[in-house]
Image (cartoon, rainbow, N blue to C red; front, side, top):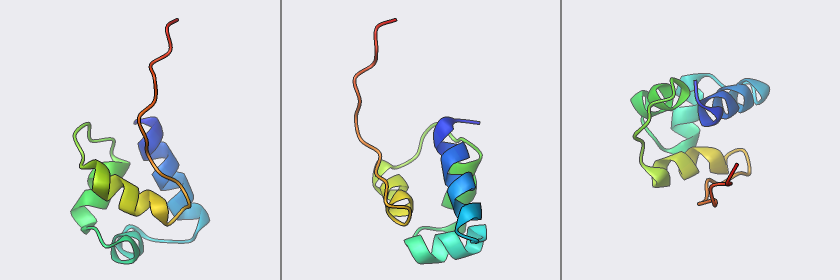
Length: 67
C-alpha cells in the first residue's frame, strides 16, 4: 500500500466517511476511490487532488532526495 493510499484511507476514517461518501463528496467515482485506497500506481492527478481537497491537502511535485 502506498503512502497516498494509507493517508486517504486514514483520513476518510477520521472524517467518518465510507468509500461511497468520499466518492460523492469529492465528485469522483466509487471505483476511483477504491483504486486509490488500494494503491493503484496510475491515477489521474486531478482526481487525486479532488479527493485530497476534502482533507485540506494537495498532491504536488517534489524533488527526489538524493540519498
